[in-house]
Length: 206
Image 1 (tube, helix red, strand yellow):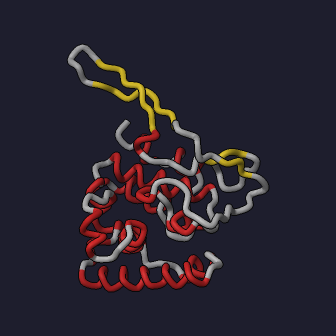
Image 2: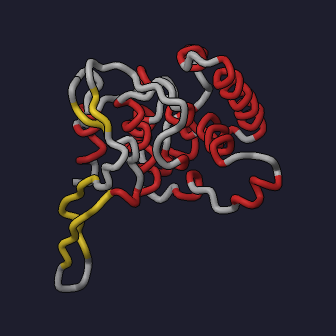
């Protein structure tokens, strides 16, 4: 899934429900994860010539999409890396920062789940680079993203600990560094899968 590779397939729906794991229990009943695979490929598409994918609608689960995935424009292999980064946060105990639990409250405020998620992610992983807003290439979406970015900036002024660089410290330095590289808001700045898998995080506790 390295950004330089072509003619491969992208799942576009990376989320915890689609990860299948094998466990090896010991005599005391403690389980060790021995391997994991990604399942549910109904949204997969063939990646050809490294061209970004543009669709008139978003693809995949709103909770785990990249910012560009929410717009359906400019989706690349880096979009899957972003989703993988969110999954790492979830697996390390950060579900409260990611999951939406009260859709009715959002509806009462006239806010869609996508708007709420974008604003949260802009708070966590911002500030939003101007180049990303322009790269979307759609006037309406650029305006919507810019509005969400401004709301996020105001929220962070009042609550600086909303930034992942602050609350992510609890995950440990290697996890913080790796996940920050996976969830960069600019897709071109994200780590590739080879960089992710070679990261010291995976051997930190070995």
